[in-house]
Length: 118
Length: 119
Picture 1 (cartoon, rainbow over the protein chains, first blue to last red):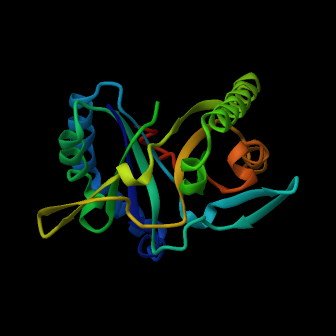
Picture 2 (picture 1 turned 60 degrees about the vertical axis):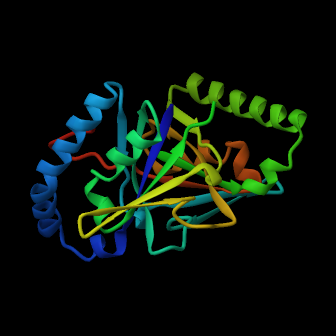
């Protein structure tokens, strides 16, 4: 079963840090992420993932009556926004839950597990 | 760049088999066009939010709930990943995604660590 693990995290808190602080936090958390990547790789050797850039860099496009409307910022007005995603092929939901709870962001954000259709 | 496709689940639920097939045909045509232009990296359709499970860890304990992160009228229904040079180019492709006509497409750059690269 294919699952998308959607990482919802508080990007406002993240954007308060300056570049040095971000680099330091990344370095601090890196061992846990590396451990996660190893676990994910064991569960699904073809796992892939994307970390999204800050939500402030997002743009939203809509087409209405053939006309394109572009707005700045993310679509969601929630405090937490999608900051990344893992795409996995796993035996069952329990395994997806186990791996989701190993994602460091689960501790201050939320991981939404969505089956991939088709 | 990642293009996140937001739309009304109810609209899809109430569509007939023919209507759904017509939408899928448009998505296939779009994907073919993006592949032809050499910008398509991948994409998936996500199952309905009612099939979602949300996991949080607080004080070392896993909290698992049924349902999506947030109950919203327009939910994330799928995504594409494009390899493009500029936001404008990404927006050009995003505007051609069929879902842009009634929902919304959020375009977000994918973060690439200067040293680590991507997973």
